[in-house]
Amino acid sequence: MQTNQHDGVTNRPWKGLGIWNVYFVLKFALAGFGYINLDLLGNALLMAWFLLPVKHRGLRILRGTLGFVAAVILIYSESWLPGIESMIENKGGITGFSLLYVAELAIDFINPRMVGWSLLALLLYFLLRNYLRLTFFTIAYFLGVVTLPFVQTLLPEEAPVQVAGTATTAQAPGKTKADDLKAVGEWYSAFVDYERERRATMPQGLSEKDTPFDILLLSICSLSNDDLVASQLDTHPVFNRFNIRFDEFNSATSYSGPALLRLLNGACGQPTHNDLYGERRTECEVMTRLGTLGYTQRLLMDHSGEYDNFLQSLRDKAGVTATLDHTKFPLRYMGFDDEEISDSLAVLRHWQRTQARSKDRRTVTLMNFIALHDGNRLPGRGRSEPFKPRAKRMFDDLNTFMNELERSGRKVMLVVVPEHGAAVRGDKIQAPRLRDIPNLRITQVPTMVKFFGLKDLPAEPIHVTGNTSYLALTSLIGKTLETDYFGKQGGSVPLEDLVKDLPQTNPVSENGQAQVLKYKDREYVRLNGGEWKPYGG
Image 1 (cartoon, helix red, strand yellow):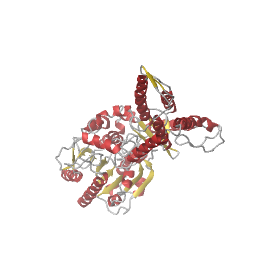
Image 2: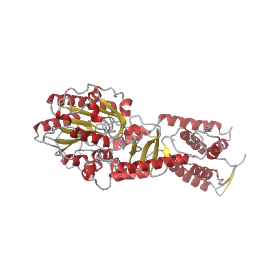
Image 3: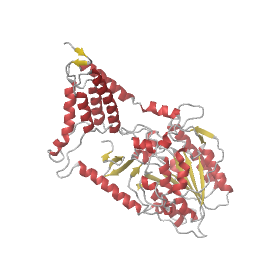
Image 4: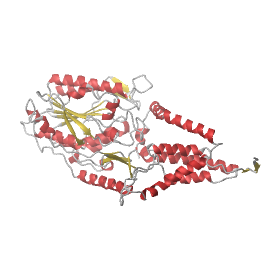
């Protein structure tokens, strides 16, 4: 066969999609396993773009260049990766990352198995292209994907039809998948309206007879129930020392700033992410409410609070007025933003010494630790320290602190409430360490309460098994005050009564550009205000 060229024009037979078959086949496979959501119209247009016969060599180069750019943009939009809107919203945090941390994330993001499958697909293309018309099979499969929804409407009820990555079971007559997703949206709207009206019950005042005690809110960054299981630390002995454990506590977000705002505004029901950053509602602010009862605020961190305007947002949106204790503590880690992170046990011991010297009989302390945040490293090291040894060190330090606090005899209500998880093992939607989508594996966190200065409390923790969030935690603080729980050595009421009828909250989690909820035992996600979709396809 001869090929004639004249003035850049090539006369040759139509060659179909060529190497772009590999691109589309890999996308079909990714969609089949739920890694991307296939955009049918976008892929049809891109396929047609590459199928159009072009004779002029310069035009073919232009078509290939424009097609490559469009293909990259298309597959990114189909993926679960953070969108441009999310990056813009979090630009303050992203620009604060150290170069070492950015490089590490980039390297760890590469999936060797996917790279291997891609290379295999490429090799198969070169082996088969001279023997099979691969474009025919690619187009045939794509047409099957496009026509499947129409075929499903003709099938009897509950007849299963599956094409990888596109569909599940045919809907009952009169009921479509769109109807299901509409119901999810309506449920979410009803949830938001309901939560706006909820309030935690707290006493209006305290009498002189009420026994004073300190409240220590220990907020730990990057620790979820799933992280504990993935790291095989869920059986650490420190967990059995707590009196109350919330088994299904939802932090409602996967970022630190909004997590602390939700905790400190926990006297009201769960707000949307946008409402969280809206007008202040002092009746929702836990620190403000406790201040009216005579509680003095204290504030300690193992970091400066400057990253992403973290501390200032707590002052502006959550009623934190206490001065940050700037005591110089021993260095433990270098942060993902190259900031020094203090030794956790040193910070805890400093709080205990300060309390022992203080004349304040009632204090509420917010203590925030970021030692478990992704990307932290030991001083002098380039590579970040793995999660498991850092978490074990944290739990060991907490155990030591609890021993020392028990020996002191001081009456303290210790509340451990993590901000969100570290996404240690990730899932098929988000790679490990990514938290842009606040799925429940990231936002279900081990929240625990311990009463110090009392005796004869149950030896085993009391478990709160329902779906709970910050409203339940604030209500528990309120009941502890109302019942004057520290008024008797064994507690003024049985521990079971203290946790009875705590308000439950349906599992809904939000960031600025993503919402995740659980509806009829299945997780759904909405990105950038778009349509609700089943999480994972």
